[in-house]
Image 1 (cartoon, rainbow, N blue to C red):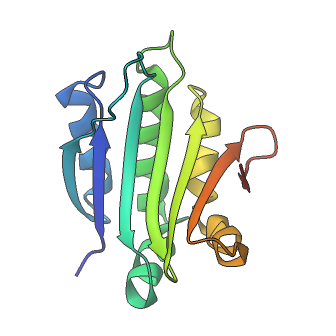
Image 2: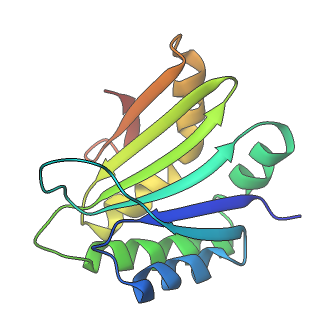
Length: 153
């Protein structure tokens, strides 16, 4: 059984863009898409969310073992290209969400650079260590674009 991956995008993403990203990851994951809505009075930049759900045991190994595989590399390249070409005038937030060892983990990468977005995908495994070392129940990490790693906000 494939691990689950939910992909949510705000209204700035077209159905075609979301479908292209979902199709890229469907070889590795059971993908579900949804419209992401963030309530705010101000205009927010574009956002796309990759929700991994509860990450532990077999699910963790299933998801995180995919990182670095040929299929993973192909999928992340397609996703990074689509995200980077999306509304080039605004920086897109690429968000990853998962639960790990009783902690709710949120990771945000803000970039339209294809290589930076690809690096954020590749560094997901490292975020587990950061989350594990954090004593709080809620862990928020941002992607350091220059160091190419996740760090506490």
